[in-house]
Length: 128
Picture 1 (cartoon, one colour):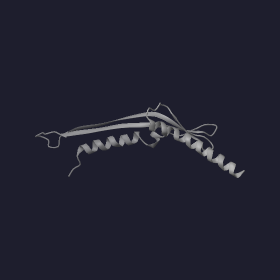
Picture 2: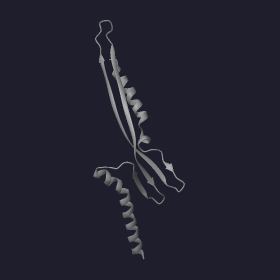
Picture 3: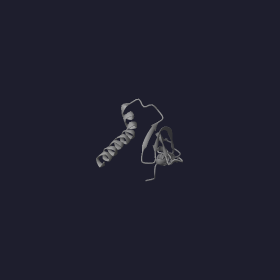
Picture 4: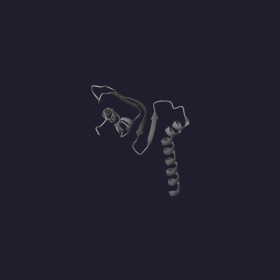
């Protein structure tokens, strides 16, 4: 059985989406600063995909097909991940988050830094 023309439309559209959206789109290329700090841009990627077609009845040609497909991609920068020498990591958000889960996740790296500093301080006091 021959391949239906809608499959070709869908394959081409999905391949174009794959070319536009890859891992470098979400986590951008690192930006290295003179002091050794590395900045990684983080983006939110949203995309939609639609495809449709119809076999048209025609007495002269049995395989008459009409169809189309399309896609839309939105890429919005949302944060920067800052990695400083010595292992300190910070997340700098570009938008104010309104829900508690996002706010807690943005504070997680800072809390980890503070906990690590407290543990190191306790270990140093025990060694003295």
